[in-house]
Image (cartoon, rainbow, N blue to C red; front, side, top):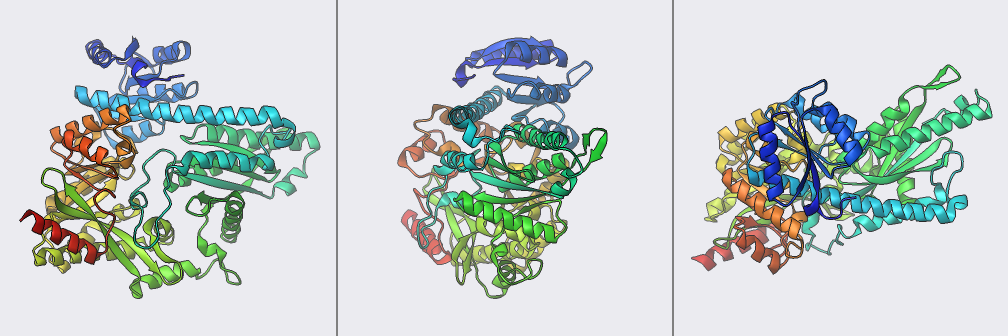
Length: 607
């Protein structure tokens, strides 16, 4: 197992010998060991199988019977070695095929030496962290299993049983606990909850799987055949979970009930995993030449957003299953607090859904503004608009607590329009007052960005608020943009031509490829807080951050560092010429009135 990223053994798969040798020379100059140069897919597979490299750097368009993407798929069946693709063709179809292999990133040819170094470092550091966590998790599981096999394991399936569930959940909870600081009371809210989560392990998904009609189907078979079916279900779940870029375990509760616990990065990832589990279980089973189909329904609850108690999370996922079955079942349903409403039809007029509708009418939404400080001048140059819901009984709620529900029930469009209009109105008001801030930033979710009338909506908002386009900045994340790349580039180019600023948010938590930045018309790159935290003690993050800033500047991009909380982090960012920062060190998110006062004081201080 890789223990030190700087001593990694790297396999290069490239059919252009000159390029391969040049790449090897660069990697060796960085201190890495180049294990071998191979020119075709089968040679790469053989090398991974026999020599176990720590990283594979592979050209997609290699010659031979299989290309780089198919080679990566076959490698993944025998090894979890991280793979970085290199390609001169960044079209949608190629990237979509490549992403299905679970690759760690891309390098778009021709790439620069700094870009190669940063991408390799980021990939190895991520892989090392994940491997360490996975090894610790497996070690913990093995220890529990060896000591308590008779009590904690289902003997037929070999899976952990309900008695083991709480221990496993608590272990996963310990992995993510330090990533979720407790939210202070009142308006002193955590900056980490205002932006997308920063690291690979942010949440735990509790996937409660109900196999509808299982008892009726199993009664058609004898005991031996029933056991065969149950073991087949268990094995499918284990194989499915093993392919996820997450940490977790399948737990047996009853013949018709399994639970999958997964520590992962986001609810969006959880939704994809849930659908994958569903698809695997829905495939046909053969028992003595008889074909059998099961009807699985999955309810999902998430820690910490829904609860941090496994018993409550199981109850919540049960409620999600109940609701899903009223809709026909055979799908994956996330829990929402609306399912807690008693004595009402869960299929109609859920309380929270109704309250979300009325929140707009009752003017319960409010925007808070996080300042952006320019390091060279110490002046406030912009703000990021962050949505809050002043709920009449639940108090002020961060966007992460209700936006997923709004997306699920189709309310994200009117809420998104309100956010955009309010932010533009406020920016114009500040400009009229004489504040010298450059932009106001508005975050776009994936569903918002995919709206067909987005361009019309934005132009109409700018017209209604009299705001010039150059004062509006739209923030999007990597995961939104990497799908349907060609279409997304076209959409962003339309907005860019209008004069709107485009910012890439949370860089480093997604594909982490500097090469694809050149495909999009970005103005600003925001480095995720996970790279900034403790940067003075973390040499890998320091090198990555410095390299990313240098590369971004070479591409003509401004760089904003998120989550800056200490003077040490600030000093480092100044030394590497980062353009601007956000974070609690300078200011928490503020109400419009508070931001106005801070910006005015900042402007007067410099005059």
